[in-house]
Amino acid sequence: MEKLAIAIIKRSHGIKGYLRIKSLSGETDHFISLKRVFVKERDTEKGFTVEDIRAVSPDGLLIKLKGINSPEASKHFVGKEILVERKYASQLKKGEYYISDLCQCDVYKSSKVIGHVKSVINAGNADLLEVLSKNGEILIIPFINHFVDKVDTGNGKICLTQDYEVP
Image: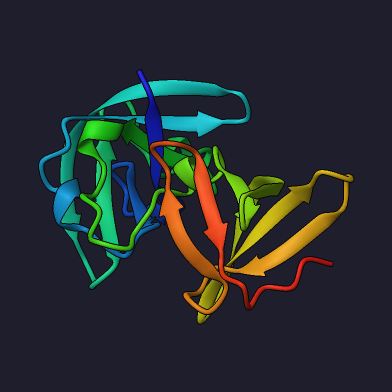
């Protein structure tokens, strides 16, 4: 079962073990119907039943997980990611992609593979693809239409425009 990160736990909230979380996508509507989530800690994931969840700001939410009942218990989870099964993640709009899907892609210039996406860096106005090139160098490619022509995550391909100069 594939899981996707949907939020970061920002801090403990109140005396009953609530956690203040921030949506990674900025979307929050899909959180309200969640019944089960996973908290990722290093290389392990622990499942929790969601007892309560509510919006407290446009991108902030409070979540109460079964078994976390005090501020002391909830503080242990600060900084951790909240994961859900892919089917419960935010629905993508046209031109949106899950980072985990982009990180499964090879990057092409014309029909030649220049590397593989290692990670995606959030850089404010535009995300940056961190690409491990065929010769072992790290390339940073702005994920914008000027440099990225087509994205086909189903086939693991990102095609660059002719404007991108391969170093």
